[in-house]
Image (tube, rainbow, N blue to C red; front, side, top):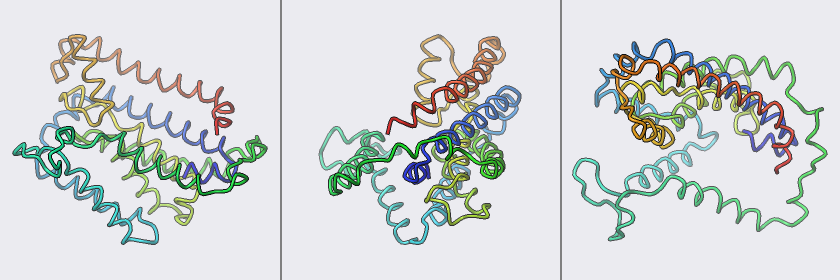
Length: 288
């Protein structure tokens, strides 16, 4: 939804919506982490394979909500995604699947490489087909006259609050990450919206929902159970262990001062992100 807004000359508006929603979701999740981490960890520890299976199954049902007018294309894309995720060693038996004898595929396909192949290369080819005059963006449209309106700010509030809660709940489940939270929230925002036809074409609510959920996914499973939700959190796990901090419930009793310093730090980081965004959005909008 950010890209269609950019195409309409509302680059600055799209960036500001993302900034406000990210800050709200980040501070919301940081407060949840600060006040609820030990209590929520007890619930997270009770989740078993049946619950994980249902979460994955529920994740696949979102396809129906975000496929737009063509459900068949959405199902085809989902099947392709499941096929790609099967490449590599079977997690249960360690037998190679769809590697075709290529040793580098044993660990599966790297997410960044897949994204570059699926999105970046396709975009390059699409642009290569276009005439030169179509590639020029009218920068005069990136002005103060196309900022977020009061009506749009009101429409952002409910998706931001609901998505922050969804992001926190999804983030509590060990092994799930910000991406799943974003898709859940985007689908929910679309079903709640009075303007569902705008989704995918530059929806203010769509950007607000995805961004607040993305930053709303908490670090509770990491700090209390030592289970990262995605690649970024896995890097944080490594950083903690390098510094002699072994994530788990004992962290809060043995090294509580460091844990609460990290939690308060997360609130400060989000505040800093907001200030930085407010001052630099005009510059970021002109990068295109």
